Amino acid sequence: MTRRGWVAGCLAALVLLLVPVGLVPLITGHGQPRTTPISVDDYYALDGPLTCESEVKEVPTLPLEAEPTALLVCADADGSMPWTAPTHLVEGDLSGLVTALSVLEPAPDQPYDCTFQGGPAYDLLLRFSRNRFARIHGDIGGCGVVTVASGDWFGAQGVLDVVIAAVVEQRSRSKPPKTVQRVDLDCNAGLESASGWPISLTGDVADLTRLVSCWQPGAPQLGAWTEAAVPPEAVRILARDIARLASTSTDPAELRCPGGPRSHYFQQLIGQTAWGDFLMVPGECRRFYASMSSDEPPPVWIPSPSAQRILDDLRR
Image (tube, rainbow, N blue to C red; front, side, top):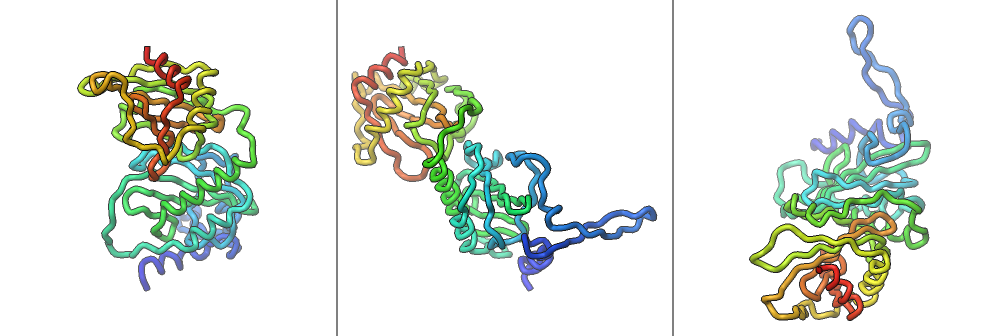
């Protein structure tokens, strides 16, 4: 029997919704250990609301034995790429997540080779019926594995893609919350980390409600960013302009730097959406990239004359 099979067998007593009781050790008055039954409901119970700080037990093994009723995705700060996760529960049909987890390939027990790419790490906190909760960890960086109590499984990117799609789908039929926790829009915060700003993997530029413009001249004068808050009306104009004009068909070589290389500069917008997402729209001269939340080539935004005037004013 392999190590994975042995571990999975030991954890079988904890499989969700299948086994009614398990055993936990206690110490008697004579110092001798004894056991007392603890229900699976108690083992996977959670005191208080579900948050990213909640202490939640790991899922015993995959595939899941039951479909969760809700999930909360949390960013793991120990991943190789900082990111900001959505803050609200995803509820309803999560069969897509169950399917994505069911087709994962188990990682071998022995050491194996893989491409050590970078990427965000995450925790999926799952709520099941009867007030049961369990956790699944994933890390797109490294070997791209999903981790549960019985071991590792390949496919962290695909699982996160399904989760992000569920977040976007729920938002499409919901209204943004009335209030969100405000993030610090600091132009120079990204300089403190080699990986840059912790941008969101969700979010639409059309939903931007706050913006800060960050500017610096071109090389060899790179250094701290000069920042300027964007007035609310200008935020709406720029957000509409990006949503209307950003296109993957735009020539990414188009720069149109006025004054030529001597007048080259970098300008980027960092902002927050009505959903609380942190977004970044980086650019140089008059070419911007409208999305930095995926590995796909981002759409290019060439601002309209009215939007460009706003951007120029923010650099003065």
